[in-house]
Length: 102
Picture 1: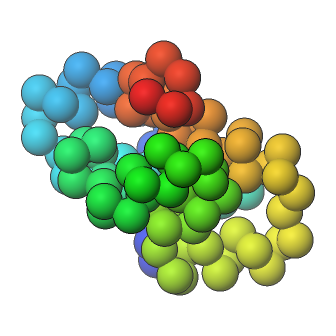
Picture 2: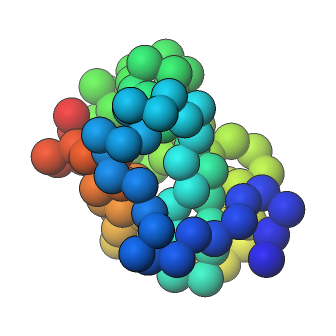
């Protein structure tokens, strides 16, 4: 288990509504063999993340959202574009977003 986050069993993951109601500042996204911690509220994302998505730069947006340490762990696995897209879709799902661009 990493120092970054503790994995939650699938049946104990909080819904987007529960995250919002409880005011949790972050969520843990379990993706493949990794766990990533990201801000639970879009309003708490760095503005650079939003700008990258608005500019159509999804990889940059994910890099900025994960931060230096988590991004370095991911890049060390030599991911493909589809991997980055899959990770973002997982983050979007956990946050209750309909589509990655929302």
